[in-house]
Image (cartoon, rainbow, N blue to C red; front, side):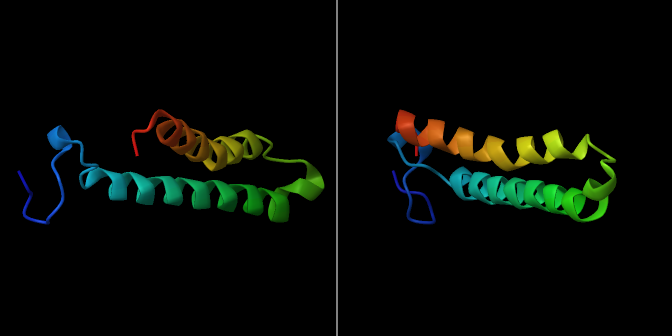
Length: 77
């Protein structure tokens, strides 16, 4: 059965509209992580302050890439 948008439903093996939303959220998380790291490097690195920003930025930057790789490798996307 076709959806109104012309795509297949999730029960028929189609990706559905959630993939686009997930991709947008992942891209936003990556950009936010890069922003946190850039902000830390620009403002706080010379004095080695606010070091908590480094692992937070790395997690925000790297996690979406690992998640998407696992989805692609499992054949979900």
